[in-house]
Image (cartoon, rainbow, N blue to C red; front, side):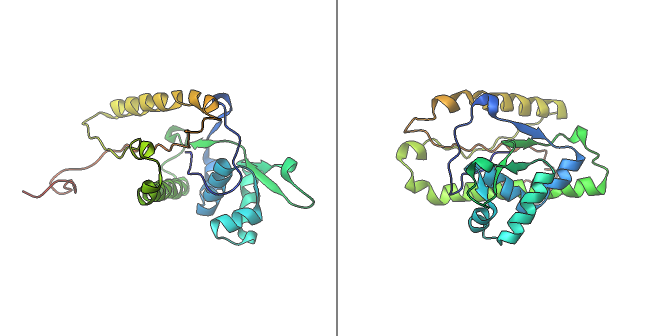
Length: 218
């Protein structure tokens, strides 16, 4: 789950082989499923190493809160010290991976504690996606015309079995991952910019008792 760029230090381009994605297990899920921890983890992934004070200013939080939750993230292995950036007593942090993966088969979805943690995680991701898209729509006129033409805001509907839905997800993921080969070669390209892709796929109930909100009443 990559996130939008935020003000601050710009991380070095990530080569495809360095794009580490962590698969969550019950313990790590509990450690990450907190809105501020997810925002801190996202900020470090996108903008590179930072101190608790820098992150507090960026996220409009107290340094005490960011410091505490960074230590919690470190205890679960999501962040680590970045001593090469420190000066004096400053403590710098960096993310240990560039994304996370949630695989339901590794979790006990019947456990209310785990289910609650998943809900927190998913809603935070959805809120972040909504914020990113709203930011783009509100600022798209500030981008060059070529970028205004290069965005996409589409949706598609199919009638699929669960197996076919998983196939669609996996094939789309393979295509998106293949574009990581461009990251290294675009590191110095003046016309390149971070490009965000959201992929949402889910079943819907469009029975008469749950009508499709996009359809006009007859």
